[in-house]
Length: 198
Image 1 (cartoon, rainbow, N blue to C red):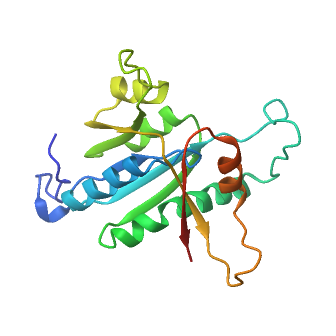
Image 2: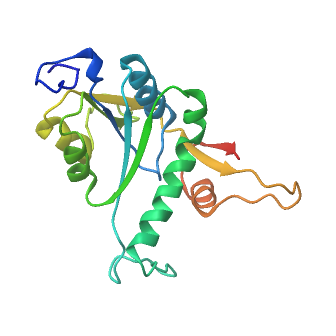
């Protein structure tokens, strides 16, 4: 596949720009290795980075005890977009020359990534390294995109270190973590890196 977008006359042209790099991110499990690979690859290719998070709207049957679903779908999407922006904040500062397009969609991750990767130059997804390396296995999302996507796929192994954004507060007293960071710190069985941002 040619990395360059088509010019107006239909020929491949470096002046028309390079095909996007699509990066699949789960804001509940944003791994530093996957984020860095996506941003660095887009920088090296001089391509736009399209970062995608897929989510499912809760319904009365999927809500857990004590959970409350937001009424409006646009509010849910806005909340997920805020989480995604927080996850990407430090990488945007580290890679100021990379144009980033953040997108959240209400859909299965594999479906959303397959659609987003149409016409892309590369799709980047993560793969957690297991404690039993003799039993190689990809997750269902990675498996689906490897077998059905029409562009190259980079499967980035990661160690399990979660990277979570934390907004700085003006007052030094009473520091507070957001609901996502708080939940991850107290309920996951692996390290969590809190990245402060303004």
